Image (cartoon, rainbow, N blue to C red; front, side):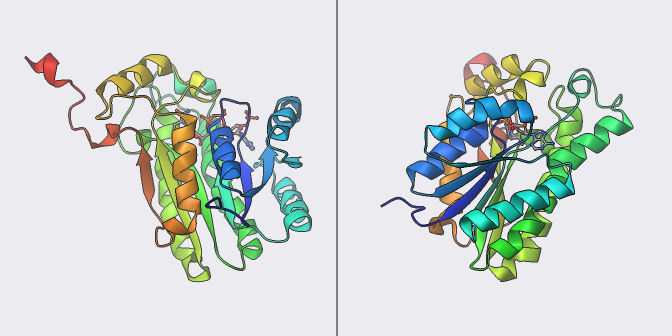
Length: 263
Ligand code: NAP
């Protein structure tokens, strides 16, 4: 029997087969969850529907998290389809491409607003609508990155957004904890996805992380999917408001230099 047998999950953020949300969806499915999926743009329907069709997921609906009405409509459909949910996965982020090249000081007001709205406020907006659908408690998981804690080249406004996202996770966890709803973040090491490819120098940065991280390996979608299963399952029962690092240990390093390079 799977760890998530009998649980209903709603997943946001599948753009294609490289998306972290797709790795999470596969892992939730493997553990027996009944899954509904939402994607952002009309153009993605072509890609997302056949992908989730591989797992016999028949609830696939569009929702731009910038639009309250779209979020309301989506949750109304989820309620009709599933009644209640136990798991919500937020794997959504956006920043203007020009804000992910060069430095942070040049960030435009509009770029800042959009990054915060899509990458941070959306978690609040989705949690608000999830609460009434989680009468028996539940688990909400968002995706973050170490650029929230330390300065990483070109991560810029997204680092600031991830810091706000992690703080939101803590505030939301305190709000909804009394209803038995847990809210956590997974801080994943770099994984090559559509969003990541918009960050200048990402390929080099991720290769470097894999070389110096204590576990000397790159993190995969599957690694994140497995951590997401644990957080969503009853085994993660007393864990809330946390940021769980799934990064091969990179975040514990004070100096990212290999022992042999010190000789
Ligand atoms: P991805 O496949 O490009 O996923 C990002 C998702 O956000 C896409 O499905 C995207 O849809 C969606 N999105 C953007 N604007 C949206 C909107 N207005 N409404 C609804 N959805 C919207 O990239 P990913 O790397 O898997 O990113 C997933 C999450 O993991 C993000 O929070 C990211 O910051 C985080 N993360 C990634 C890494 C990494 O190295 N890849 C590491 C740590 C954390 P569209 O494509 O249609 O815009």
